[in-house]
Length: 314
Ligand SMILES: [Zn+2]
Ligand SMILES: [Zn+2]
Image (cartoon, rainbow, N blue to C red; front, side, top):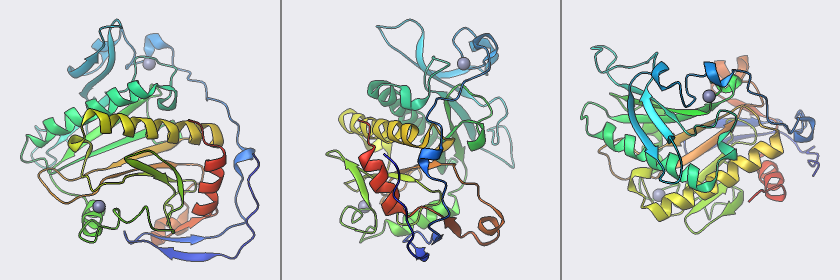
């Protein structure tokens, strides 16, 4: 459906994480202006480092998920060929891994089944546990860059894990927001965070201060720190809502470049309330954003949530 016009006045907003945005409605390119087509992947499978048959082109495999019903692997993990951090480096100690989510070259994450997404999340949790065994690793950043404009250097869909010897400042800010009374626990009752969909354990919503227009958050209803703390039933519910979020975003915004950011607890730390953010990169950060750290957003999160809700794909 066509997006509603928003001719209301601008507004300055700040959230409990210290994020500030200026809502400047009326300047937006609307979603119906975007093409709802899956962008074509141009690398031939024979030349793709991440395709089955080319396993010898990646650094040695660390883990793989195999299914009895399927030949080969469903997902696999190996070290990044060009790591940012390395266990052998004294001044940049850490781990940098790649998790290939599917053997199928042409598929995007939103095109995987709920069970395939569940297996992907389960593998990410397994690697987190392995990272936590190294006491020098304090935090593992998990993120996904989808399409080149969101930072992906290879088009076969994949996720990266960076185990680092310190807790990043933004994560420390999140830790503060998780102290009692936890802001994430009360988010379901907070009208500033417009809801789109929920299942028994998770809520899909638009954040009050969106870093990117049409940004999405998935927040657990209970105070839970990480995917490593979830049983299979809960992880499957997370896979279900992540699948709905990605399918809806991709179809409504026309397969935009985007990032998935896993905001998870630092290792060996208690009290965190995790969430996932999905940030479509349909608007570029310009000089103002880089200079001030304040974001200009032309779509109100409550309007984005309303549009997502009527275009929801389950
Ligand atoms: Zn491939
Ligand atoms: Zn909480």
